[in-house]
Image (tube, rainbow, N blue to C red; front, top):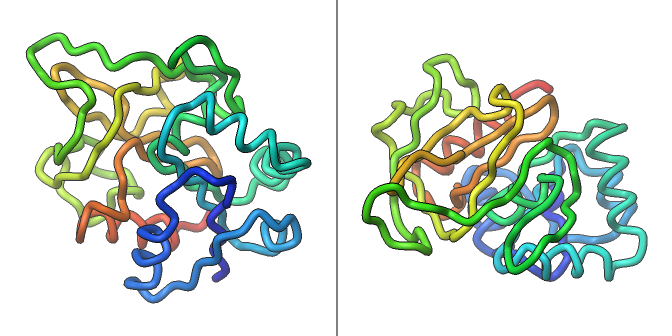
Length: 207
């Protein structure tokens, strides 16, 4: 299986590559259109601000149309990680209003805590999910921790897109999927055994 980590200049790609290598899979970091076309699966990473990330994607001429075609028309499996998940949304309210890729009917909003909790949300938290959710196969709901670093969260207009929920001063979306599109707000590559299991589940799933 060929895994292409999309290189647009913003993302912790080394940790992702190490994680895939650890579970016995090779991944390439690339923005080359031919390599993206040839890959079996794509990973959209991201660290930083939403607006900066979209500018970086737009700055690579032709990249956004290629990604849109592969994700929405070819329906190549895509995994979004942290900011990469947020880029799936139609727009973000982070430091203004910014248009996203629009792959999911969702909006990125500030993380507003209903109980005392620090923002940014940095650290380990459990995620709750349905017992039959394949993305978390082999992992106990509400008992396995994942590593988060974020100040904004995704609000989906279709609740069916949400497959994982975390509580940090209140509930927020931790994982989503629709058809070939899968994403996590947490960093599976930094979530030790639990994160590696999730990556293996994603790779094993037949879309």
